Length: 498
Ligand code: BES
Ligand code: MN
Ligand code: ZN
Image (cartoon, protein in one colour):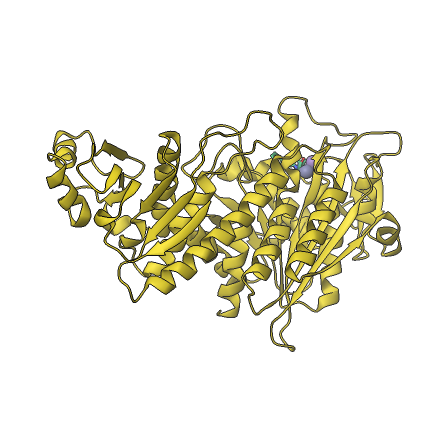
């Protein structure tokens, strides 16, 4: 699929499809108004009759039957003008792209970047339109004989004027890069665990390193042991798949700039281990490496966009399996941090493997460490599917991540981390235990991670947001969301003022 920019008037472009927009409760304006006249007032009639009110999520499609330069017109509702954000644009672009594709259109022009979003220029609007379009057209069919047949070949984003056309073109490319990487993360999540193994993830990281100039180091079982990563070793014991610890270094910022360190949970399949999970929906646990996919693909994006920053990505990766050599309830592991951990429940494995990555991060004397993980069902219970849980030891850091969440549509919501929760994971036989009481499970998990960090740290729990199995969204099909890629790139730039 090709993307390009133009500053031509959208209604004058010869095209199969033209996507325009309309604000709820307003009179028709701009190209929509002009086209309405040519098209026997079909649009204004639809608005008047209430068939099309211009609410968010609504679209109106009209076949022009040769009366306009475009064969098909699509008007997307943006809702009330004052409430329009970049996320509105992403969603409208996604819905339009899918409607065109399903209607057999191969090439279309989108005017979404001509909308009005407070605090955003045409560049950001164009980027959002490109993101929404690419993300919405994703389909995971690599394991099927029958592929998605209808394909969009080219998308032209209209810029408000000739002066901003280069900016619009640049941001369209940026949006495409970010969406491509989010889609690669989706592939890694959607691929089953017999294909997307820890070594597969490591190879993906290696490949990215070669392609984009990222320094990638992979530790195998021997090095993991030599490094005393006792949490990762404990979880990996039960699996025949060898564990991997993936290290990605992009040091293209100023020499004396401390790196931002990103850590992602790369659990390629979570059976629960000896504390085995119920079989219902267990197949979805192939998505337990979503945090790892986010880190690998965020690092890819940062390199592809050549962002002048020092960023390190760490992904501990293994399966969690029951077996003759599995770790057992009551066993004690010593993490790389030196903290001893009583493993009460082998299904609370994410925090065990993350603890070693968090401890490893100290070697970089980082500016801050941010981890992302499908860590607790409790977080999904607390926040549902529309916000990830956000924890941290530094208010500014947490604030920046929250802002990035709003800017990218990958919203994060702050949760507390008071000392009372830390008391709940005290163990009788070790320094800490890997589960607390039933209530507040997302918070005790975060409190467990905190025991292994020093310095500025934040934790994003994406258990409820990384994978969609109920109902597709405007630009998110069922399956892996690819969450965290756009969030992390925005965060790195925001933190460094880039
Ligand atoms: N990977 C799961 C968390 C999860 C649950 C992710 C549902 C996505 C959807 C994690 O390893 C886990 O099993 N957590 C346990 C912790 C419990 C044993 C304290 C949980 O949430 O039940
Ligand atoms: Mn688990
Ligand atoms: Zn897990």
